[in-house]
Length: 403
Image 1 (cartoon, helix red, strand yellow):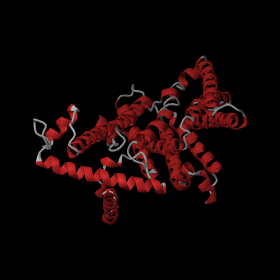
Image 2 (spheres, one colour):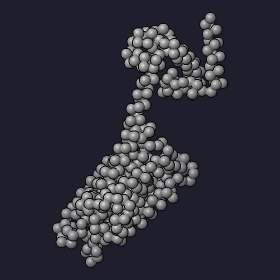
Image 3 (cartoon, one colour):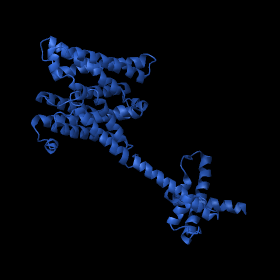
Image 4 (cartoon, one colour):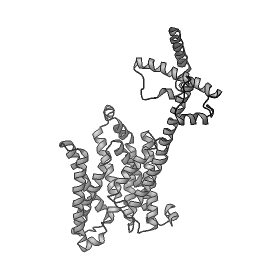
């Protein structure tokens, strides 16, 4: 059954929901990346919680007016208005008062969510409210989703994704350098509003599938996981969109195999698995790569210190240094250096002297990058042969001056 869901052969509605969740995941991954790059990711938390009062109010208004209170279009519309109001209040509190953004977000999300819970409690007390299933918007559910609902989510997900891709370049420029963006004629304020509007849209769209509590996870986890894989914004954007899409696709397919499973938590757990894989296995920023780099650095330090000691006829006291040199065949079991050890030690000492001379020259020009441990790097891999020849000439003159 899982394969049927993954291969989109489980049914027309299930296929539409899966595709809609996939597009929603892509849209949340991309919009979340922009929020993450702008260091504004937590605003999505305020947006998602601020949708709840609008959801309840829209249901009450439609029911009072004699309309179908379960209309997804009406519920999403009410949620969007409520979320926009919450977003405006956060912006006003941040820009017009001395309240910090995190305090403003905390205040707005808690008040709006509390008001929404009160409204849902009132709705549950009326007969029509019990049958409306509004509580499924908290954690998300695709069970009982109508064809029109699936199409609506699919279309809105496609529109938000298209808008983000259309303004991708402007958003990236503003994310990294707002002043430079202004010189290009791009308004950072308008771009910020655009990103927030799209984040609001995907939050509202995702309420039915992921739930308003967990949609924020999709906006944050996918970009954070993507950040482990690259330093380039376009690549992060692409990976984040892929991670978000995969989470929506796989999570919805798993949920479709068992109607009792909540869709939102399954999608978020899929997203977390991708984050965990990135955290552990990403080639440069993953925990295993970092541990390996630290181990290589530590080994290089021990080897360099040991070889310099051999070159200067000094004793080696560190047991680990001795073990590494012995393992490499540079020192015998009795501690005496081998022929290969003497050769490499002489080369290491020359490398150290060359770097010391080059550092002194670069320090005079103010172009020295102090955090780099130069003596651990083979100078022939970093400087040209002409530069090395110049250094050797300088060392030769220094030697002649000493004599």
